[in-house]
Amino acid sequence: MTDKDKGLSPLVHNNPWETLRQFTAARIALGRTGSSLPTDELLRFGLAHAQARDAVHQPFDSDALETELHQMGLETLTVASAAPDRATYLCRPDLGRKLSEESRESLQSRAREASDIVLVVADGLSSKAVHRQAVPLINALLPYLRTLELTLGPVVLAHQSRVALGDDIAQVMKAKAVAILIGERPGLSSPDSLGIYMTWGPHTKRLESERNCISNVRPEGLDYPQAAFKLAWLLEQSFHRQLSGVNLKDESDNPALHNKVVPTFTLG
Image (cartoon, rainbow, N blue to C red; front, side):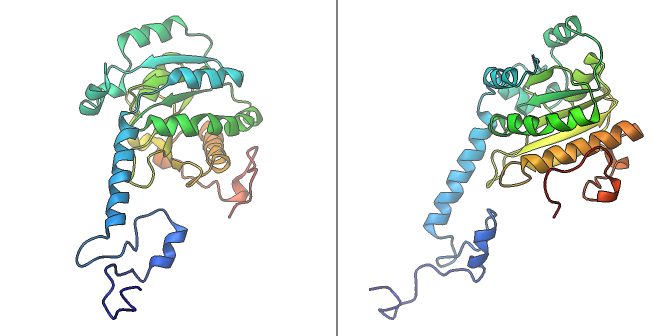
């Protein structure tokens, strides 16, 4: 017999928006018991918080990604930022924005003919995101790069990396553009979200406003085909206009502006 059958007030009061929870992973319509959250929702919150913390501290397994990328026929290089460990990386964002001297010397010694674009796969604040999303995204992007006839340099796997490290890497490699695929700061419903930052003419003095960002790349957010198309469209326009950032608005949803890059999915 339920509390309602006994004529008692229910312990948990449901939220009128509860039916909307089926459409989002956001923490809405949690209900209440008295003036507090129901116990099951409090436990889910604790689990989500633990998963977000784990994503930040999970080591970056670049060896596993290197194997997968080699199987796709891609050459790779592995570098590290000037942050010597995770604790330093979290406390000193500035060190995560520049190469360690050892990595800089290694890149310079292996420098070859300059490429149009360099892809950097970086742990950022969620190596879990990189492990799950980077390879499928690159696989979806490669056909577009062939269509655009852009030469791709070795894929660089970067440890203890902030976004700006991509500019330092690409400057050493003399690339015309860089796209860094990096783990975003984990949210309580998305510990594995990948971000993409594309910069034209990368160098270490670039401002954040001179990059284009594509965020929330994951199956539950912006899926791989759509993210790859947006990045390819931005690259096409960037090479055509020779700029990136706030001066390059993402209008990839406008079919009138499509040139070589044509989506492989239906635009909503």
